[in-house]
Image (cartoon, rainbow, N blue to C red; front, side):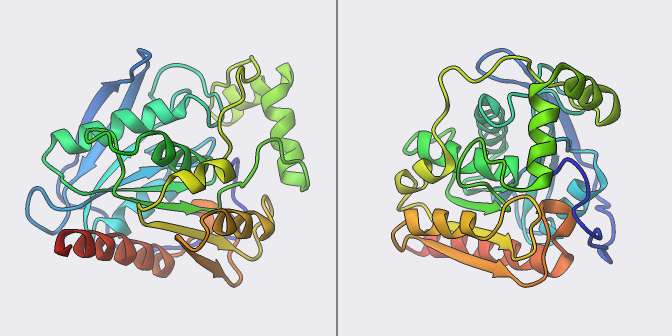
Amino acid sequence: MSSGPAGQDARSSVQPITVRSRRVMLRTRDGVPIEAAHDPGPGPAGGPVIVVAHGFTGDLERSHVRRAARVFAQRAAVVTFSFRGHGRSGGRSTVGDREVLDLVAAVEWARSLGHEQVVTVGFSMGGSVVLRHAALHRGRTEARSDAVVAVSAPARWYYRGTAPMRRLHWLVTRPAGRIVGRIGLRTRIHPHEWDPVPLSPVESVPLIGPTPLLIVHGDRDPYFPVDHPRMLAAAASGGAELWLEPGMGHAEHAADDGLLARIGGWATASWTTATAE
C-alpha cells in the first residue's frame, strides 16, 4: 500500500525507454476506463510481457513505476496501467477488490498484442491483486497469468499492526482521509465498505498452483512485517519461491534496480521453462 516513500527511495542508473510506448484507454468488464501503456522489449514480437500492477496511490506515470518498467524492459515487453481511481483512469479505488478487473483488462490487452506468455508483477496493493487474479482466472486463456510475482504484498485484510497501515486505514475509511487522498495523493477512493469481502491473498495462494509464484518482501518493510510473506509462502505448500530481501523497505520505492533485474530474470526464466515443457 505504497501511500508514500517508505524510507529512502531506490535510485536508478537505467536509461529511459527510447522506443515510443503505445498508450490506450482500456475498458474493464464493469465499464471503467483504464489507462495503459505498452513498451516493447528487446526480443521479437510475441515474446514474454511483464504486466506491472502498482501500489495504492501510484499510477503508470509515477517515477517509481516508470523506473520498474525501464528495468523490466531490458528483458521483456512491459505493460503498465493505472488502477481505477488513480492517474487518468476512471472510477474510484476499491483498494484491491474490483482492481482485479483492471488487471484482467491489462492482461487481455497484452495477449491481444501477440504476447503468448504473461507474467504479472504486483507491488503492495498490486501484489494482493495479482494473487487474487491468478487464483480467480486459472485456465481462462485470455485473462490468465503464466507466472506471478507479489512484492511487499499483505497476507490478510484489515491489518492495522503498524503505524503506516493505521494511517492508511484512516485515509480509506474517513471522509477527511478520502479528501486528502483525492487532493494530496491524486487518488479517488470509493466511500463504501467491501460487500462481500473479497478472497484474501493468503486464501488465494493455494488456488494458484501449478502457476509459478514468487513472493518478494523486505525485512524492513514498515507496512507489513515478515510474517506476511511467510504466511503466503506457507499457504503455497512448497509451490512458491520466497525472497526475503535484507534491508529492503516497502514496494516500488524500495526495490532497487538490482532486485528489479532479478525479478525480470525470474519472470523470463519462468517463460523459458514453460516453453521448453
